[in-house]
Image (cartoon, rainbow, N blue to C red; front, top):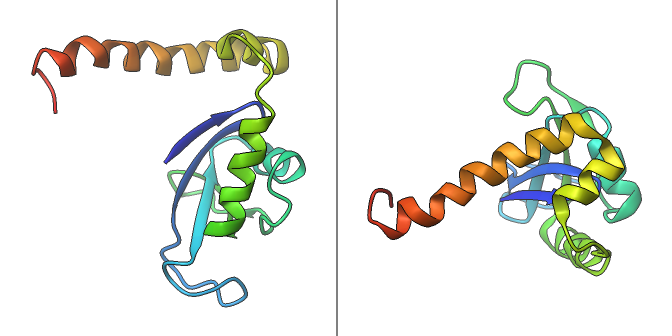
Length: 124
């Protein structure tokens, strides 16, 4: 699951390796980030139960932390309750500045194309 929030962009996937302190495979998520500090912001704003950030420099997402599915669901609820803007990209511009807003706008543009491409049968 890709998640864009007021505090950063994250990829949430089922943890591939056991996390004994949190639970077994199937109970734990790996929350991954591309930008240093985004997991710290997520932890501070919405996910106090998120484990420590681990840096793995040669991976697709160099920063990751682990959390139970239940705790992450609570974090997503907090993030949802914190929506206080009418335009996401404008809010990102205010919070993070132009560089990140332009990156997020590219994602928006690609997904905007999905409307026509998937509706017309050009994609699945």
